[in-house]
Image (cartoon, rainbow, N blue to C red; front, side):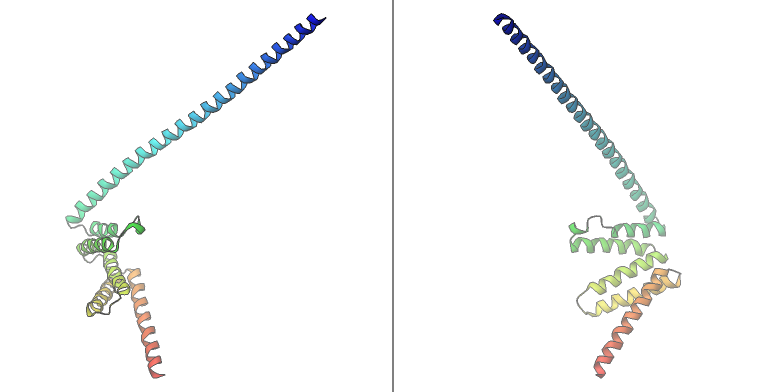
Length: 191
């Protein structure tokens, strides 16, 4: 009977040991399958990143060719291309990284291109807008600032005469703000 108990215990131990091995194998298979799934996911993400990177490189190359073509046309006298080149110099993708000096250089380049656009109404408006903003953000009341403001008003007037609605709005805004400030200053002077 003892021998039967020992055999029963050893059979139970074998069964337990076999069950433990099966559990370990199953757990190992689950871990392996989880690892395979994570590797597949990682590979898929890498492939997506490579595809996006390739698309970004193609897009960047296309953009550079487009700007080069646009600049070529603008240099040969195409007014809308000159306007667009000026506008491109005003687009600021990272405003926090741009120094005031770099911004002024970009504005100067934009003005140069916009001057090449001649009497194209949106270019006149944008030139006026740049000059007007310079007078607004300028702290000094130097006569050159008044000259810049009169240049901006003249550019707005020419653009408005050619039918540019933004220029017409800007003229109205300037005249309204100047009449508001002059009437408030005359009211305070009479009080």
